[in-house]
Image (cartoon, rainbow, N blue to C red; front, side):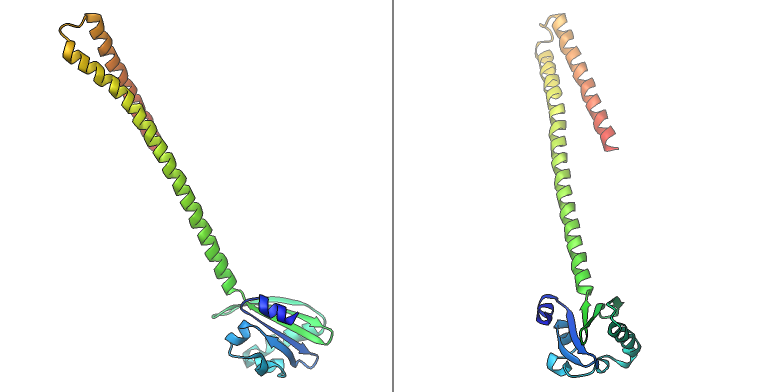
Length: 193
């Protein structure tokens, strides 16, 4: 069980201690990060493994565990953020310490990546909508302009010989298409506000 914890929990230290508070088994990446090998730790008293400034904390933790309590606590520090779980066993206890700063950093990094991915997807959707809108606008302008150009060219070429009613028809078509273009422009300006 101890080996499974040590092998599967990154940035952790595990210590199994007896009723005399002597470390029976120890291991973990965090233990090595602190400069210890399990051979150097096993057989030593728990209090020997912590600086004197942590003696009160350790004493309180161990007395609760020896009384049968399971302790869960977090201790943010400058170099790491420790999550500590201490549980009683039949003849002592076990302490699991894990630096969750790396976990929090990984979660923050994953969140940032998800946010960037969402933003990229939304940017793609926005670009697609912009392209569709640009195509629609071009279509809305191209057809009326073609009609205006054709009527204007016919008037220019055949004004003198064209019957009055046909001239009026082309002039009305030009006026109608100009009003239609003006309406399309007003719609575009309203959307852009």
